Amino acid sequence: MKLVWSPETASKAYIDTVKFCELSQESGVAELISAMAAGWNANFIVETWSKGGIMATSIGLSVASRHTGGRHVCIVPDEQSRLEYVERMVEASMTPEVIVGEAEEVMDELVGIDFMVVDCKRKDFARILRLAKLSSRGAVLVCKNASLRTASSFKWRSVLDGRSRRLVRSVFLPVGMGLDIAHVAASGGNSGSSSSSSSSSSRWIKHIDQQSGEEHVIRKVK
Image 1 (spheres, helix red, strand yellow):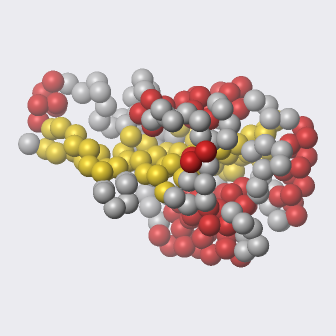
Image 2 (tube, one colour; image 1 turned 60 degrees about the vertical axis):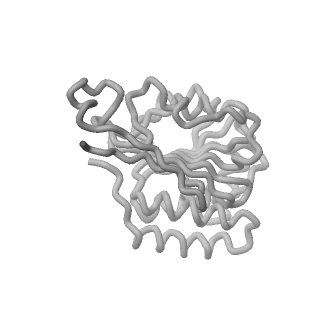
């Protein structure tokens, strides 16, 4: 199996998130992320959050999980963050699962992630992505506040390097403080370990849309 897009579910999550986040300054980001998580029918949604953070994205992810019937987990660094997160989510009528601990430590327990959101304000965001145990049916990875990240050399391929997982496409969207999004292929697909006969019959072509900036990786069969 692989991730399959459902525009109907995406629209429902988008509309519901608009209702919940209509007073939020970050609602544009929340609505888009919620629609993506629901549209891809994410079964296991993971996010990172720290004390004082904006709640709109978290609310949007909870809305998406309601539409997909999936699991929504938030990783927080300490007990103070957990208390604030739970209190503010309860005020929004949301009850997500919260795990306390450094993201790098708890990632080992979270298996089968198919939608993940990390904040580029964290210095270790790239390592967190690299340690994520993704679903065999593929995954969508999202970096919030991408315009602020200090790791200017960050590349999605470096996150997936050595994991036998192919990057289907990636795109940077100027929404909020920037969203950097990657779609990872389901496991068992084409990888660098293909045989020479397979390599001779097909090749991969990268195309970047000059208007949107979106990167497409296309397989050309001879």
